[in-house]
Structure formats: C-alpha cells, structure tokens
Amino acid sequence: MSQQPSLRVRGLVKRFGGLLATDHVDLDVFPNGIHALIGPNGAGKTTLVHQLAGSLLADEGRIEFMGRDMARMPMHKRVLHGVARSHQLTNIFGGYSVLHNILLAVQARSGSSFRFTGSPFDEPALIEEAMVVVDLVGLKGAEMQTAKALSYGEQRRVEIAIALATQPKLLLLDEPLAGMGSTDAAAIVGLIEQLKQRTTIVLIEHDMGAVFRLADQISVLVYGQVIATDTPSAIRSSSVVRSAYLGDETP
Image (cartoon, rainbow, N blue to C red; front, side):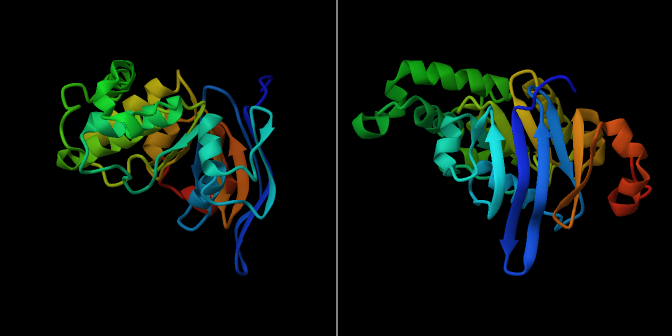
C-alpha cells in the first residue's frame, strides 16, 4: 500500500510468567479501513487489543498511533488521543438509560462538569451530540429505556455507541458478534460497515463470514505470533493459514 499506516506496532511482547502471550508482534493498520485479527482461542488476540487500548502495558515494543508512541501511555490518555474499544463481554451501566450511558462518554471526552454541577440532562449540547450517536447505532426511540432492559444485541449497540461517543480515530472491536443470533449479528455487521467510513477499525471476530465480508486486511495470530497479514482473498487461499487455523471451513 502507498498509504502510510496510522497504527504501527513493532516488536510487541507481553509475558505472563513463562508464556509469551504476544511474541514480538509487528502490525500495520491503515486509515479508514478494517483490519481483522483472527486465530484460534489462546492465540493472543485479546491480549494484543488490551495492549493497544492500554489496559495492559507491553513488556517490550512500540505502539505508534498517528506518529505518537503510546506503548507506555495509560488508557485514559489513549482515549483522549482517539483510541476506543468494546469488550468481549458487554460493559455498560445496566441501571442507566441508553442516553445516560452515552452522555457519560460524551462528557468524558468534552470535559463537561455536569457530574459536579447537576444532571447530564441539563446540558442540551451534550444531549444533542449523544442523540446523533444513538441514531447512528440504530437505537433512536429506545434512548430512555434502561440499558439492562434491552436485548443482548441492543446492549452491544450501546457499548459500541459509548466508544463512538469519544469520537475515536481508532476503534477496537473485540468479538462484537459473540453470543448473537443471526438477525442481531447481521445488524451489527451492517453497523460496522457504516463505521468504516468514519474511523479506522481493528476487529477481533470468530465469525469468518463476517470477517471476510468486512475486512480490508487480515492478520492471523497463532501462539502469540503473526503468521500472515494480507488481503482477505490471499488469506483465504493461503495454505499456511489453512493449516494453522482455517482448515476447510472458510466461507
């Protein structure tokens, strides 16, 4: 590619005792595309995303995002520099409304002081911004519902909305389709396709049909190492990748 990567990972290492969870990982992620990370369970995919997000600090290596080395940067500062994530398990405030969940993320990014001076619903500008995100993720009409009362698929939308409310330049999605039925999964795939126009995405997903539909580039991890990075068509036809992971189940 002639385009320069917005995210460059070099020699990234994370050890847990004698286990190399990420083993000198190199990765280039290009702007406004979807870069999927695939591999068997235990390959190190989620550990890698934790390191990109800052919830785990790498033992060695560099993480450069838009020219800035973030390898030692705490997670909250990475958010301020445009890095946001979702989780394998839904991570929302179940007792709050959909809108309240998203307002908290808008406030965190904007620096508004409503938590000290009153209700977030007293700040029309924040509500307007949050409602744009509500509409984007397809939850308009459900914004005042308590998050825990929503379906699982809708709760996943709320979590993605919280990440989007921080206006990320890099969005890390960790198994966004996990546990979903086919209808909800199809809706989330459609949402991710829309988000590609707004931000760069790193995607972990076990649904290979979704991966090959969504991804511009795919990296395959096995035992903490990247064994291949290429286009979906090249990954699909790679004998090395088939032997290590895909087998004969590629869609």
